[in-house]
Length: 183
Image 1 (cartoon, rainbow, N blue to C red):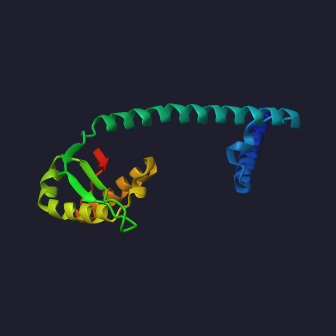
Image 2: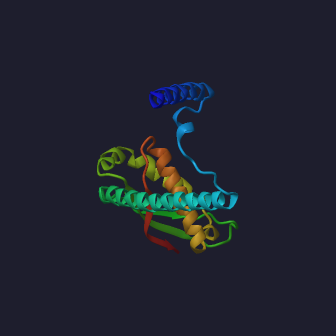
Image 3: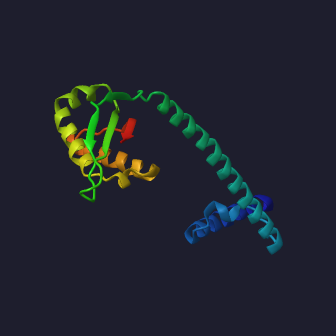
């Protein structure tokens, strides 16, 4: 009978310790047999955990990035091809700084790059406004304004800005030059 009394006493002690442990906030974790680790071993274990987390994060980054690239490629494949609309030829005389200089002329053939075919029908009614914007701007240019690729780039950007202002809220993607002649 001594063994049953001792077993009952041990069980009651464990229950009392369990209740005290839960009150202290330890609960079932306090009952686990965790060996004491030396500081060196703790540093090694911590370093191994950091390496594992960094490796997992790197793998996720590269694998998830590949999936995003595939999704972007699929979206790019669904993009509609642009539509091009030819503008009428524009022939203007350039501004001269001196009254005795000979008159120079600028002939420009321009194409508008539109995001979709539906915009062609929207631009046709405002074509006179576009031609007026082109004429008034181009007549103020001097031959030196058109020198080099930088001059042509500025001309393209300004014409694109003027077209977009004329057809707002719609927008063209770009103004493309088919021909530029200065005489």
